[in-house]
Amino acid sequence: MTSKKDWEDYFELLNGRKPTPDEVAAALQKGEFEAEQPAAQVSQPQAQVSQAQPSQAAAAPTAAAPAANQEGKFKGFLAWYKDALLHPVNAASRAEQPHFGYAIISYLITVLLSAGIFWNITRRIFAWAKEQQGADTSLINKISDQVTSPIFTTFFITFIFLFLVALPGLFLTAKNGKGFKNLCADYLSWFPAISLIALIGFVYSYIAAMPSTSEWENMLESAFENGNFTPLMNGISSVLLTILPLIAIPSFAIGLTYYKAFQMVIEARIQGQKFDAFWWFIIQIVITVVITMIVMAVIVDPQFSSLGNKIANTISNATSSSSYSY
Image 1 (spheres, helix red, strand yellow):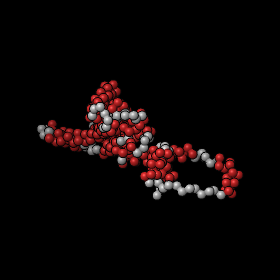
Image 2 (cartoon, helix red, strand yellow):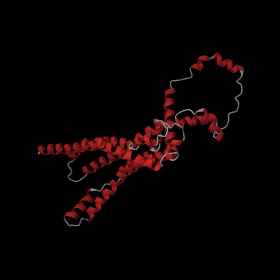
Image 3 (cartoon, rainbow, N blue to C red):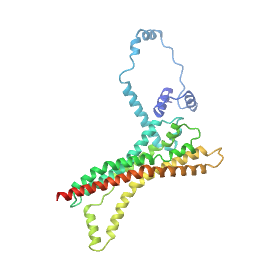
Image 4 (cartoon, rainbow, N blue to C red):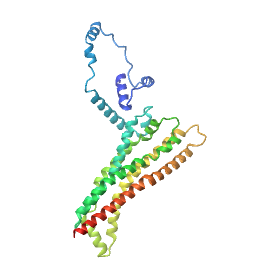
């Protein structure tokens, strides 16, 4: 049977705080740890030794305390992350105050991995272009240097907002007495699982097949010299099938945040409401759609327009400099 101290240490590691007396009493009643036996009386000689050496007791804290504290926080995050990853549905209900900082970290990990999918496939496309026979590698290098980093920044900013568009509506439809941090932590509690989906997409962006030069040459030759467009269409379909999962995986991850919002609305409005939880969810959808449109118009579209202009200017300048060299 687990001791009270071990149970308290595990609780603090998992939740980032010490248990309240009510939580300790509830856990004891459930039999989650063994009741403590009355401590034996400490002998008088030991007490005298302790009193005779107060300086040693005072010197107990060491320089290693900050490092141990950081290690404890890291272990606490790993324990929380593993628990939330394996049991996402119950992640928010394990403690009265879920650890907000851990939830934010898991959200940022998801955003980084999602943006990394599009950065990596862009990098691979430029690497593939350099391998083509007769390719102007200097031109490709110039374009790649100017485009690859902005691609990551653009998608990073985009996903920061797209993963949160369902959150504002929840302050109206699902707050139900919850504080700001608790509501946000509940919404973000699925992000350890969502980050795993983003990780799968990021890994896939490394192993997704890219057509070889010889395959494209054969397809183009068959299409334009022999009039047989079937191989070319098959090749284009293959490329689309390669790219489609790279788009579908982040889209699925965003869709899970919408489902999480739906679950939160149902839990908050299932009982004692003037009208059905269904209508609260409709309100949530309307607010989410409006927020998404605002984000797309104010943040996402300008980002991609700026990126498109940057790519066009880079190609134009690189082409002009190449023509002058001749």
